[in-house]
Amino acid sequence: MMPQTGQKVGAGEFFRQVRQEANKVTWPTRKETLVTTAMVFAMSFLAAIFFFVVDWFVSHGVRLILGLGA
Image (cartoon, rainbow, N blue to C red):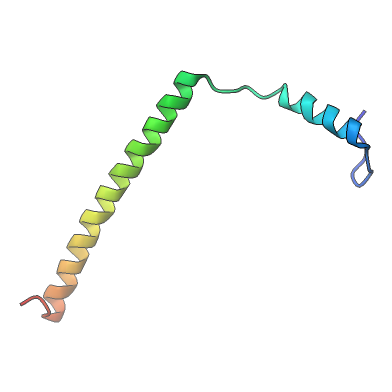
């Protein structure tokens, strides 16, 4: 039985509830973890390239408008 909000439980009961909740977790497989990690790196790389290109165009545009690019 779950205690009401604000009610204190003992350390033993707390750890029993933690173990019970942890058993409900569906953990990813090694392959899923590797694929997800690779996708994060790939998307980070693509985002870095995109922002580099956008920054380059904006900086050249500002230099052209302000006449700073000699």
